[in-house]
Image (cartoon, rainbow, N blue to C red; front, side, top):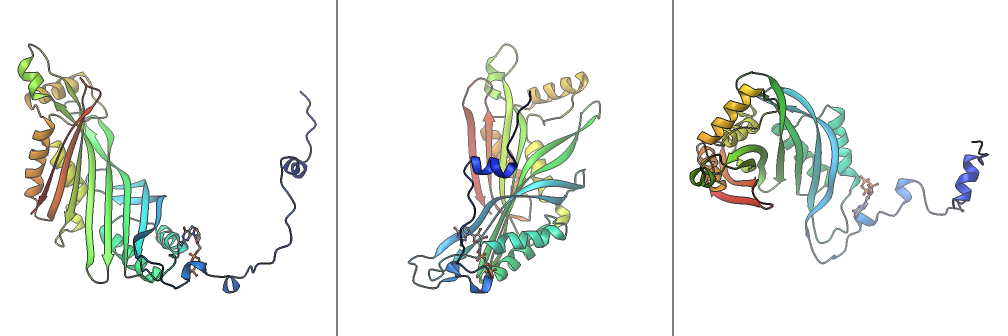
Length: 297
Ligand SMILES: Nc1nc2c(ncn2[C@@H]2O[C@H](COP(=O)(O)OP(=O)(O)OP(=O)(O)O)[C@@H](O)[C@H]2O)c(=O)[nH]1
């Protein structure tokens, strides 16, 4: 094949690009109009305005191995906006993220609290909120073989700051477990259906919480230690036999899961309130089974 192509500039013209016209508007920042900083009565104050779905590599400390890990986090950053401000200064949200990225952003709670307070100052607003979600990785050994592999759970941190009320620290962990149906076990001559369930624990941390306690590991343990069995990346046949028998010996409805996890979270003194949800991707249905419980201690 021998195709004679026009130059790249000619190709762009062919596909509709035009020469820039004469430009009259200022190019220097101080001469540009600043629409978003216009003050007037704009009718309503806003609860939240900012940016969402921002991806960034971050560092995470973990009590479970790997104890230092890098992962990709998705951020939402917002503040409120008074009725007399037309718009927020959007560029300052990403400027704040970039400042922390250059320092090697680690998602420790004290660092995130500094981030949110500084963000409110940078925005010249009375409050700010950070929500960040990331896959958190933890090693899991086969129960017989001891062979190690990596599992992950979805972790979320939400820090709110206001000059008036200070900080609230909410965290969420969503992890996979195995559940075996008690009803199916009871009524069947053989076997019982079982499935992958997802436990979502949404927790408010008290001021006593310190990073040594690692909320991620504690919430994972609350879910897994009450499940029919844990999820494993690598299982050899002796492992598989153990996991299968363990599930049969520990049947759980979604209701059982939520109540048992609730009891564990209730006993943790650095948790002030929480919601537990269990969702089973039923293997005998196309629909899921769900249960949810909220506790204010
Ligand atoms: N408020 C607002 N800004 C938007 C919106 N859509 C885009 N922008 C952003 O406007 C930003 C520029 O505005 P500012 O952050 O106020 O920029 P600036 O005034 O040069 O920066 P400062 O001097 O820090 O105030 C860009 O980052 C755009 O992304 C919107 O819906 N609302």
